[in-house]
Image (cartoon, rainbow, N blue to C red; front, side, top):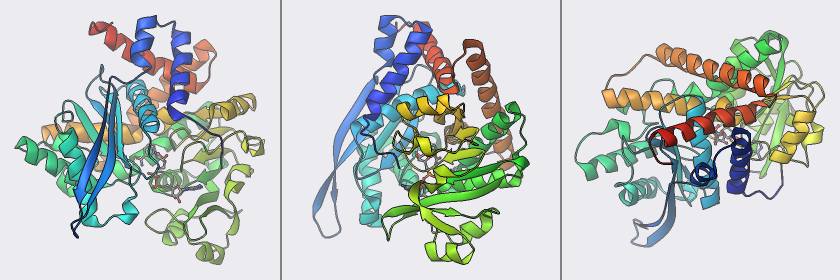
Amino acid sequence: MGNEKINPYKMAQAQFDKAADLLGLEPNVRELLRQPLREYQFVIPIRSVDGDVKVFKGFRVQHNDALGPCKGGIRFHPLETIDQIRALSMLMTWKCAVVDIPLGGAMGGVVCDPHTLSTKMQERLCRGWVRQMSKNIGPFTDIPEPDIMTNPQHMLWMLDEYEVLHGGRYPGAVTGKPVTVGGALGRTEATGFGVVYMLREALKKLKLKPKDTVASVQGFGNVAQHVIRLYEQLGGKVICVSCWNHHDRVAYSFRKEDGLEFKTLLSITDDFGEIDKDKARDIGCEVLPEDAWLEQEVDILIPAALEYQIAMNNVESINGRVKIIAEGANTPITDEAEAVINRMGILVIPDFISNSGGVICSYFEQVQSNSNHYWAKDEVFGKLDVKMTAAFINVCELAEKRGINLRDAAHLIGVARVAQACRERGWI
Ligand code: NAD
């Protein structure tokens, strides 16, 4: 696991500065784009069933909405910080722009650990967050969606509170809703499947067939599971998967040389993506330390768990056979480690195109909810594949033309599109 002290906002700004230099952006455009347009920080007082009042800290950061209403997740996490939220809101702006959806970037959160909150308290927290933000979010302003430790039920409580306050039904005000109440079919699979659509295109570029490749994956939650499922359907073989173990408070890597079968692995995994260590041994896995997933002799690495997992302390242990790293998680590689990876000649498919399937499908949900007309699952996956493949090809073409890596090329496209929208609106 990476262990560098990182300020995520400074890292996001440094990446923006690099793109701004390459684009030759004017000073006033830089000033506008390297910080959020609006930030809300507030407290949410919640009365528990026994009458005590607990006060939680909440955030919403709207980085930029020149291309359209803001879109971004809401996280529940005990260690959440305003700088993390700022960084993610900025990433969301470039992500929406580079995959060409008419939305801006936002992110929000509450400092809390939902494991320690009753269902009723979680509901009150969701409703309390919306009461604080209700004038500044909405279907044509800023549309929240789930992120770490928030789920469709949380989103429905938020939508319900918004509708109570605004007096009507506004299904497009929140996405990631349960499918029974306006959620999009395919949203659960979308992020993981999207990573594989991009991986498939990257393999084509390297003239490799999925069936001739082997992969190792960090994480076995929502993103990783659907990555592994589709990659396996394309003929690929996953030999190592790592995940967190809450009893031992460490992560383990589970390895099986002749391949881990997705369905078997899923049958020994809990709802939080934690694989049972003993049952893993029973199905023939070696149980290895946390970072072993990174050291495997494979063609593809897929970090799909947490931020900053590949850092200077472990980057050198990447095996020389690795050709592609497809980022499922947000910012799983530090800037310094990525410089080493670039020197190793590994193709990195950067997070904000690689895992954009989630936000693209959220956009599809918003479109469906606003028109109150819902699409079949195959239609969703077809449209998702078209959008993601187009974005990948665009980014690769620019990378080749300018002699830069895919992350820089994706930043250039995203930043240029947002800057252009700001100019055309007459903001700068
Ligand atoms: P999740 O909570 O469903 O799964 C997380 C997985 O990571 C679990 O299997 C957990 O055991 C594992 N994990 C936690 N700590 C670990 C460690 N130290 N080492 C190895 N494994 C560890 O989360 P998710 O929805 O799959 O999201 C994963 C990442 O992808 C996050 O960074 C998230 O921000 C990003 N992401 C998610 C989506 C989405 O639609 N879910 C979209 C874009 C980006």
